[in-house]
Length: 410
Image (cartoon, rainbow, N blue to C red; front, top):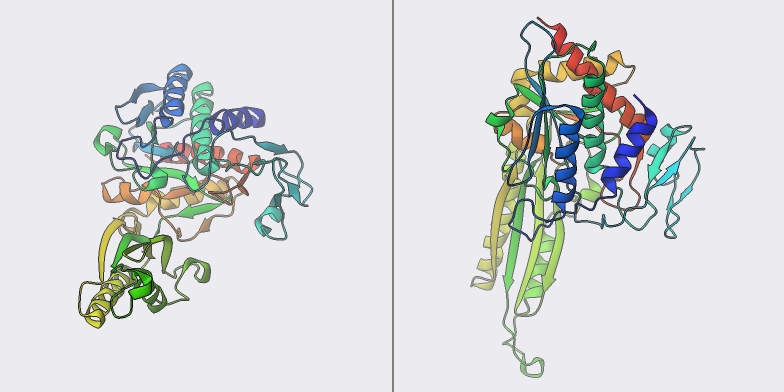
């Protein structure tokens, strides 16, 4: 794979702002996502892909036809082109550090420093080419690194027909970062037997387990009166909210958990005396534990209402996605193929659970088993995000090698 081609392609994508909007009910949730969607659609046509389509919701699909005579499974590769609303992706100014020396990297648009003393994953990329932010935006390697890798792999196979492969489907989606990436994905139209999302982090990651996920909105109701005459009359909803927060297990939060440990995460709050609201996400790999966490929150609401002898609190819990392990384990050969591809390329597979979710988790429940493969980036959703170019090259090679392995099986 040509290093400069990957760098130029990646930068052409990340400099287009595609931040999704959780407060919008359109698809895509932000009009600016169309800018990159239309660019990708045209690039797929220009490179010679077949059946290139973009629908009214900006979902892009294309086909690389088989170049072998025998029948093979049809496989797919999927990435999302939106970036997270957690941090701005407008006017991304990437820094390219050649032959990284292993030390601190000043993010020159700010006073921030990307340091291996804090982000120790950096140490494994000494001597490589690293692309960072300038400290004022995120990088959007999540998931424009994945798009770069899929596009580059398709072009490489088109340009080198001696590489044997079966039919390959490509899919690019909007709004993954706000949990809607798969909502309007047409699995039947896509037509793959299975697929891979290129949406992981460090080199070697291969994931087929993710959190079960739900969101909860907890609302607290108070009573406002003049504070000078409030005795026995005022009810401050913020104090009731504080009771709720303090009653949940303090150590079962993201900053205190890892690996298979689940959590309650308070990610937004707003309050006044009359009414307050807490927004939580609930996560657990184990389905029974996941259901128990939701029950804990509901029981706490019931207890507070009994304590105040009125409806002091209400809760709305909505499931978001489920652990794809249940859908992938019956077809574990699709994980085995990806693992073998990595080994063939000298990459040590890191098979571990995702402490989050991808489009693949929802697609797996829609009938398209879809493990997740590394895309190479680190420190997503903030100004310390970076990606080693060599990791993107390897991810591109993994795509090609998977295609070869699937075509070899008669």
